[in-house]
Length: 83
Image (tube, rainbow, N blue to C red):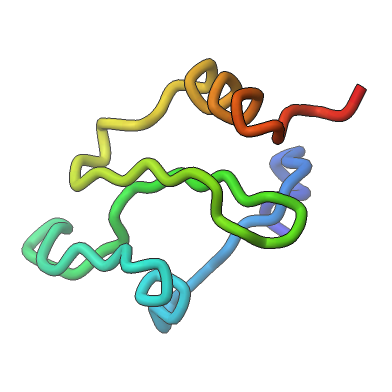
């Protein structure tokens, strides 16, 4: 798998049919090069029960939450790494 080859320790999602993109309301109509539809950049924190606890959405691919911001938010939600 691509993620394993890159040394990632988390799963990657490929969504060519836009099922998950639409489920999470991430479709950015005409947001891509030459006006093609693309997924909006987003970060999610999901708890162990599968509940989405935090979302950071943007229409600009250059705007992302920093790693520190995500970690602080996870800690404040009690989603930090176990002791």
